Image (tube, rainbow, N blue to C red; front, side, top):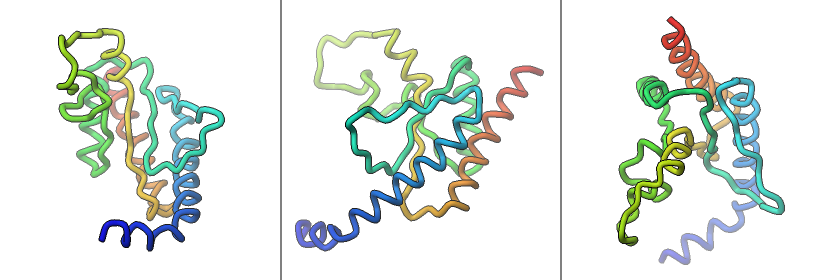
Length: 148
């Protein structure tokens, strides 16, 4: 049954890849206008089919990053900060298959600024603008609160 369902979706793959790339690139262009956000470039010769965007927050402390994620969530946009994760496989402290466990403070610090934002391919440019408005607005609110 799973194979039959997956096979029926194969003709949709090129469109979904194109839509995912469009969505990613539209959001990346807007996020990169903010001096506190860096969107890592794609690695060559990578061919992406993104349904999310990863970005790094820079020049913010942990408290501000937590406030940013909370402000996004309060506005209905979930931004996952890998460093705040209790279940994401990208966070080494969730790895239960490696012993002994180590702290890895440099990696923990890097993950504390790394974010993931889901971008379902069904989203249209107006939707993406609304999502990025929330993200940028939340970050601006945090920056203003820190400066006050």
